[in-house]
Image (cartoon, rainbow, N blue to C red):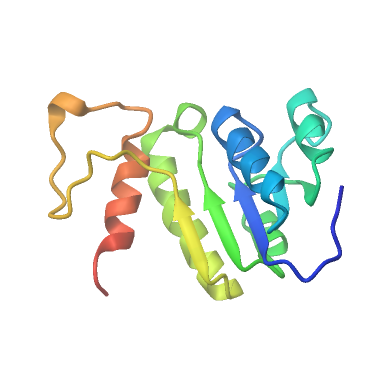
Length: 149
């Protein structure tokens, strides 16, 4: 369901997976947001279920495609990002995490929430005993975005 209210628009990137689905359900339940969900398949059962929630609009596209990102960011004030390290691997997740940030900034997005691991210390140290290969890319992107320019 799409909303035409003056609510702030939040874009959720990373599909209709378990974590993003929970975020969308909670935020939809508040009635405070107009939510756009970018998903490769808006007809999947999970995406369709989320699309029935109040103030949720499904957008078919890929968060690893620049044209899809530029289009999805139009009119977006906030963005929640949770990329899939399983699907793209660590190197691609790092590249796309930074590229998503660049495109969001260019598009005028005011706030980004980037899903990452808590073991990223403020001094940038990675403790190998906590290494989780399919999510290390998220941690490295989050650390990069924390660095002063």
